Image 1: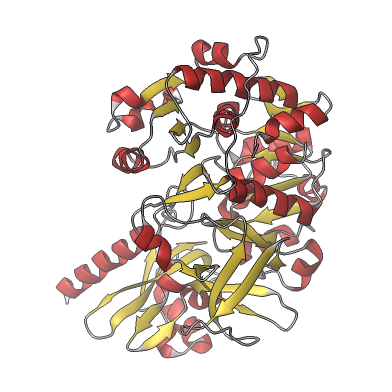
Image 2: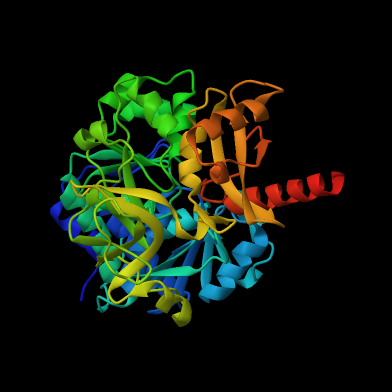
Length: 504
């Protein structure tokens, strides 16, 4: 089967900007994107890359990621974008695990590749040599080879929030279906424009933003590195139809002096995903008449659920319902479907779901129940069929035999006027097994913050749910995908608990 869809897109589309790079002052039509992909496919072939070989790219948001993706699709190679925020050892582990054959990189990030075999480091994507290879003024048509729908098309590694990163596999079928599901649900068309600020090594940026936009024939504006102030300027200039970003990125635009809510009100959709919704950010935007709606997905199942602007007004914390061609159920521990309002594990069945983890059949078996992917997220469904994420199943705190959902504690704690942001985790406790702690960013200094927070929480929650320890921080530790780094926060809390124990 032929999955060379950029060739089809170029055949059917008028000549118009498909990708615009304001930093480099370049833009490319669909016809030029196809030529760049053809030229790169010839080059990779000349370097000995064959069907099934892994082609890596270690670079910020750039058209080069699309060159390598489209070339890989044409020649049946496996596309691997690597998270450039990882440390050298994590990057080297991914390179080794993936059995990568060739790695393109941005010179700025070369210092992070010190633990990678230098023979694999092939070329700087910003070099004249690279641009000469893909230059669309010199076209060498490439006849795409046939691949099967279930052949491996791409690998994206998990962020490792709860352990060792794993290579999530995408078949051609799952990779393409994700874009199709989103396009049909949101009625994407060639008039749509968006700005890609979320890193393109992440499914939220690549699978859920870049590919649906390009598959529909829209226009993609590149922001090489996210910056809230610069993004506000890009929004004012290009007037995007929609945005998809993680909550902390919206916060970073809101706090800039050039933030203009009118630019956000013009958008059809303002979607947050990639981590737990932040009610404070939703509330802040709502004051300006902007509804940020929640989307839901994970590396193993890119955007599979999303709310609507209308429903978000009534249910701002809901992730809504499944997008086109996605089925979702909520299961108890015995894998039976739970009733309305009951909490269980969210499970997903769809063609955009990963077939599993690269080289890890035992890990793959653990995440499936029949044809359903077990997401590891606790959720509940209301009488209208709208779904609400409660917490990560793995992050459930068991203290003295009682189950505590961190999200429940965070929701209450965030209501206190002293709290700007908070993250709740469990830490080791000699008596209760685990106890509850909260990393907090305070709106103002208050030497009596702990007493005030404790009294507030005890009025609203059962005693066993109240944090035993608070840790003020000036910034919230984030992992490589800009989600709160709960492992780092938990480690910080365990160290603080040990210090307090020694003092006692």
